[in-house]
Image (cartoon, rainbow, N blue to C red; front, side, top):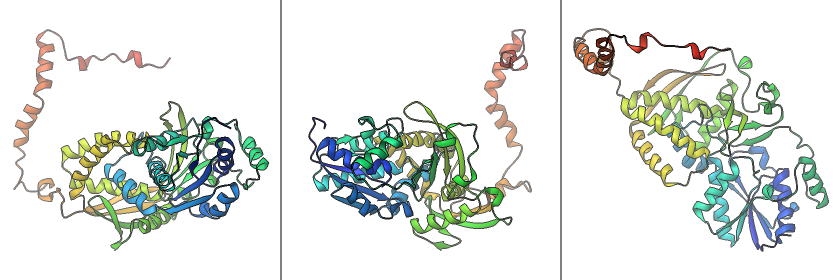
Length: 420
């Protein structure tokens, strides 16, 4: 048993093998009462029987809270409005769920008078950082216990042996080779054969999406309505956030939308390979970008693209509760005031194809863009603009030519780029 005395701990509990074993481990090593906390983020059947399982593992009580709407409204939608995507493809489905769970761990700890919180994250991953940065930001007086950084358990076999020794109920059907995280926004897959980035994912691994090859041969058209950058309706029917995501996940999944296979750079420094299924999120990101294309002016949209990259890094790194993220959010919210309207998309065999967009705040002017009559645009004006816009290029080229040479763009040396 550790020398440090802890009276009561609130554990982030999933009911899987690791967190089931952590309950008796905390009691045996810290001599403390253990309270479990589970956030219902849309794991569905994974929540079945959790209360009984937690108590049979030795927990004094368990909190199970439905936080799906809070998750979508306060975490998913702001990130969607920002257009934040980590390393070009990852839509951050696990990343922004962790600060919400950790926030509620702190809330329950304060309510119960606990002096510590605990999580089942390994010392190699990103999630340990996300949990602990949130705790530091919200209540730095709480101790954080991370068993994976302390105990001698090193394998699944070790964990099963520990469970057997202390009569912890675990399911021997939990022999899936993949490590998964599921919520209403996405489902991630890591480990197993995916650890070799050359291996193609097995078809049976996927759970939310059909293979594009098996998707319907007929395209499906949908209209998505937005209010200030937040999706609110499907085909004109207003829906709550949870209803909208539930419906779009099913529809998009049936058409093979939202599969991504990436090798990402973890915060702790190593690369890891992950496969993600994000049906509704993929569709909504594409639709949101299409609506912004007619509602945002050129310079705002281009600058917002820079902000999106930084926003994604903050979310991925667990820095949700930071002043910078709030400041970027303030900028994003200003940009979204006119992002209201509808986007028509066509779903076809893994593709989201934007086929229409409209908004009462659209900056698109058909009379300006038309190739027809010139009532509002004098094409002769373009000549003066080009002369001014290209003036730095002209001056630089004249400097070379007047010196007896030629523009260096005409004599590039690409030999160093040859492959041996």
